Image (cartoon, rainbow, N blue to C red; front, top):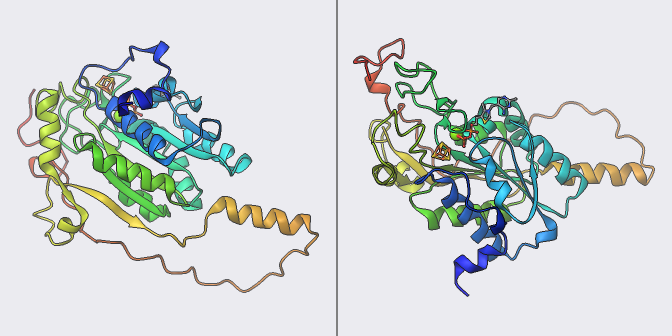
Length: 318
Ligand SMILES: Cc1ncc(C[n+]2csc(CCOP(=O)(O)OP(=O)(O)O)c2C)c(N)n1
Ligand code: SF4
Ligand SMILES: [Mg+2]
């Protein structure tokens, strides 16, 4: 059977056609995720996928595994509850940059901090696609959205850096334009024990693309591909050379970081065995975090050059 037919077993084909616009990257990432499920031999009854709200989060509506289409920004909170109740389940969150990093930003940093064994795949299209193209926390300064017709004046989050700093023990980035490496990252993230964050850079030709260059989905995919480089190549480059680049691959990995659910289970076991509470002990300095695999300095924002000190583009106008 072909791969396409194989992943159909994980799809509610009766719900198709999907709501996504022609050229949207969401289907590509959803397909990559389902191929990872297939390759890893995950069992339907023990795999739960949680989405929030947004075009990207809508993926859970088409997936025939255990699914929860939750509420805006709260996918990680639902997923945390599921993982705590059923540690034997594989729990995956599909979210967007608005869902996961704006309204859900607080849940995001705390899921990273706890290092709970959940895989979070965030579809980054740099906008709120579903609600018409507002500025999201990953939109670059100078980019245009419905809430910033003269260009965004906000600095953007590098979500991989945020995840790493907050405590995630597997951090990776891939692009929809280069699907096989993204698929491998998703597989590695699911296999990793701890909080895995995978940023998938996706085109939204409709809402982001109609206001920002390059025009058209092929050009958007080509542009992303041309700007993507591996972490190893990035490690040898200067911040100036990294301008405009999308660094892809595994950015951070620590297989020994304590995982939240296991630590909690150990406490429950001790309590049930009637163990006395641990005596208060002097504060220990936190163990140093594993160094990054590669440490490229944060490159200037994509449109940084085109903005003055206020962040407004020097040459405005649509
Ligand atoms: C509490 C709440 N606030 C706002 C909304 C409206 N809303 C729905 S989707 C969305 C943005 C989604 O953006 P993102 O997660 O980036 O998904 P995309 O559509 O870009 O894939 C917003 C603001 C909502 N549904 N619920
Ligand atoms: S608005 Fe953008 S993100 Fe939403 S379905 Fe259309 S192309 Fe995809
Ligand atoms: Mg988005």
